[in-house]
Amino acid sequence: MKNLIKLKYLYKLKEAGVNYFDGFVSVEKKIDMPNELKELENICKNCSLCDLGKTRTNVVFGEGNPNAKIMFIGEGPGEMEDKTGRPFVGRAGKLLTKIIENVLELDRNDVYIANIVKCRPPNNRVPSIEEAETCKPYLLKQIDIIEPKILVCLGKTAFMYLLNSDLAISKVRGQIFEYKGKKVIPTYHPSFLLRNPSAKKEAYKDFLLIKSML
Ligand code: URA
Image 1: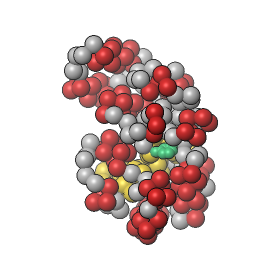
Image 2: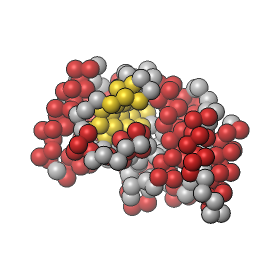
Image 3: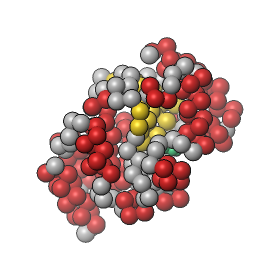
Image 4: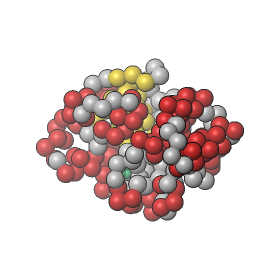
């Protein structure tokens, strides 16, 4: 856990006005996290590496099949997720569950669901780059441990922070990217689909592609 302590130290430096962002990238690669999902969850649940830890009710580590072939990555917990400690349980979560069951013909328990940040950003704002980069080692370790074949990025934020890309989700959705030998497919976030039902047609196509790859 020495590297976690180092990461905390670097975060303190940031608070003191020292720009350590480049250093962060190399720390992220070297960070020493446990190889057990439960152990990782326990560490994550006590995390106070960024300010989101000060306002959260619960850490939302992620849930699902530890041997899942497919992992969904959202942006960050919303109100319901913060209250319950579970990912995608609000309105957007209900839509995601319906898609998993009705389009992919899987049970929600067959897949793994996680987020870029594990604590709720106040007022559901988009997580900052510092918050995302601070939290990302947890997600990357979840991916390392679970080894899904397919990573589905739900919305721009998940895609942007996973692949360091600034491309619009409308441009990249339904295309196949790669991250450490895993296929990455970005699609619209279910919250976007709730606000823009006409985009469901395109999302449906994306999920049919995902289904064909399973
Ligand atoms: N939106 C997300 O991005 N993640 C959740 O867990 C819930 C809503």
